[in-house]
Image (tube, rainbow, N blue to C red):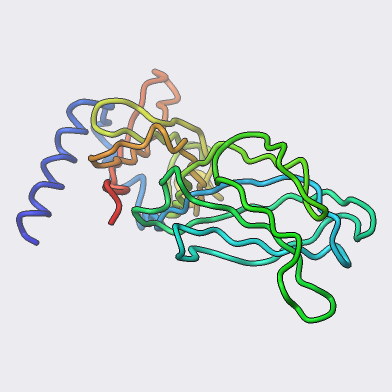
Length: 235
């Protein structure tokens, strides 16, 4: 364990040197960001389509081989016998399986007579538009998957505006701007949802979250705060 943390510290130091941000002489990074918490990630898929199901209620299941990863139900905007539209957001928990390309999505209706599964439609859980259909489901579209992290903490920056960036120690994967609930000299709370396309995630590496502000006079980055956000591969 000690060796693992030493390696993490070394990676963090390398990331700071590889992506330097200008520091202010009278304002340290601890004075600008604190209590930063990063949630465990989920892999998000959004599924859209049409369903003709009793009372507009359908069920779904995501499988890795014979093992069910997640399951639940949703509703359409119109019940059968009409075709109703639906949008289903799927969140797969962190795990080696979550980024696999051979997961299966099952859509089905629960029989109003005995609760059995009817009109089951099985599709690969991959980005695309699918022509496969049955009497219960059609016009299925699956978006490109993203890895989602939720970040929260406190910031004390000018007008509450901060910048964030995520790197793998070599390249930036995503950048953005956020706003805390209050500006300096007060501490403001902030929450950020960071989305990273699955294909840009490192196969084997460390994700570094950088939080910083822009100096109101020079326009240069200041008050850099670095956090180890995640490590891959996922176990």
